[in-house]
Length: 312
Image 1 (tube, rainbow, N blue to C red):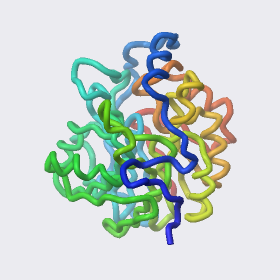
Image 2: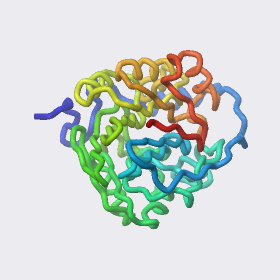
Image 3: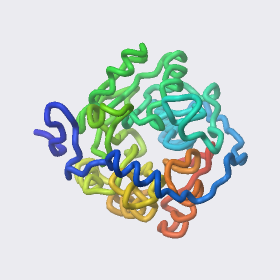
């Protein structure tokens, strides 16, 4: 029995509520009417940190590298989410969104990485140059949504575990479950919805960790809570939300992320998908400012690039 709703028609994947990303006409309308909030071209406030080679006991150490790249360290398993160290989130080296802050960890300073989790194939989440460098280090397994494995295989990146929603794999003793997100996929003009998008729930000593990937607000948060229980920690996106008419079907704003935190029953949450690339009309640091205004107490944390938190 499927634990999550049907989401594939034999040719394309779709969201449970049949919501779709804005089309090319909407994109043109946004580009013609866009009034981005001014932001610095580059913010030189990151002093890269060096994570420890290992943690002990039931400790969980979480380091925000940048954007949606998070290093999760537990005693038996190190996991890296949606890694990007490139200067641009783009198919080109000369055009596309350019980073406004440095990564908070140098790639060479990473400890061993047992599992690399990719949530979908957009360029700010699946960065080929970074994946090649990680593959060259050796020792990593790559977990991807349905359909994404073919791209990595063509680049000789692996080993690969390709998961549909509800499927799981165990790596270095940690169970990794693919769960729904409300988003879309594309790397070109003609491949929309050809591959899946997802989040992940990571099990292990010390409680579960939920990585939401890239997602709009939706009923999937309640489904994940019902099927997986309340996470010890949730990694929730808060950026790229303005203008709402264009972005709300694919991204959450900070207020929605706080509501997702509440629905999930997360003991703690960390904000991701903000502060490195300006992908929408809100300013570079507007998401973190708004989150600090609306977040409940100290349970929803904003980390800077390179900053860590530890759960004992």
